[in-house]
Length: 108
Image (cartoon, rainbow, N blue to C red; front, side, top):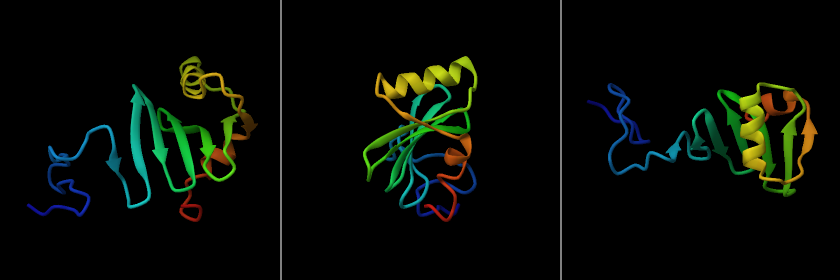
């Protein structure tokens, strides 16, 4: 059985016991942090990006210290995810395209 350098088996997809389940390294610069059911955070060198289900909906810019949220109205659950993560912090609204392009290959 061949093992990838990230510690995940190619054949089974299993995570070895020594790797924490709450943080899985996707690449050297991206980390996935599950926050709640269908609510995840991607930690990059430049941003923290909140995903609701599989959609990026809010972020924190580590260089400008600003928070942004999507202007698009999604489901009530996604709105709860955003509000829970922001926890009262005022965030500037951005079009959904801003978040859709945030983790593009060119920006990572």
